[in-house]
Length: 343
Image (tube, rainbow, N blue to C red; front, side, top):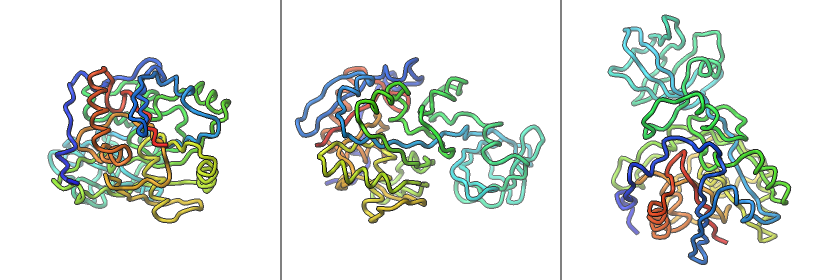
């Protein structure tokens, strides 16, 4: 099996990339792919309720996207853009930065001549910043930040993105990107799903730049996946155990949930856990926690595509992507989704 990242490429016309969300979330397309039967079926996402059965377990990521991108000025007067990566403690954070020249350690970053952060450390593309404002970390981002739309969306963020680039069940601040598989759910859908006897559980995985950073090495096994923060309750493990005993489907809503559950499974975590997740899932991985995956269509040569190929098989997934392109599915964060069933 080749581990060359170049072999995980596919052709995608520019007009297949969704640059804006649909007016109604659940109007998106859903490609239902039964891997055991090698069968595709085109659905509308709102019809997911007809696919699910009583006793099925849906696990979702209730992280909340913050307005994570801020345009600031360095002490020199030059411009700098920062993107929240993680909170270190109550007063300091790590950010990704973009600037023509690096700032100086112990200098200040300002907005409208008001000092907001002090630069404590610099490493590669990251800064460690100490807040010098009276506002809390997340209040600073709420006041000055923009919705951190992916760079392939070639337009400025709008007010509507604040709501649309957020799941309806988002609860805990900390992500720089939405868990996009969850963007298709409406509150009305969730109520119907619960009323049908489907079990829904939530974990919190704060999505950082690490999820999306490009694989720059030829051999993807040399890629550093980095860490992200997870909080998960032991009730999820109990629910998974019951679902397995009953032969029910265990459905990960998104790759972030899949990574979280597989991390716990591989590390023997069966109790409540709060801490780092640093698992890189690629073809050859054997999934032990889930048997179904709801996921959007991901970028070529990305770690997210590798995870989906690990779950569904490289040939199956690449062929499904080709089918999706041919049948006018919308790709990436604001695009359509797949329901991959392997039970």
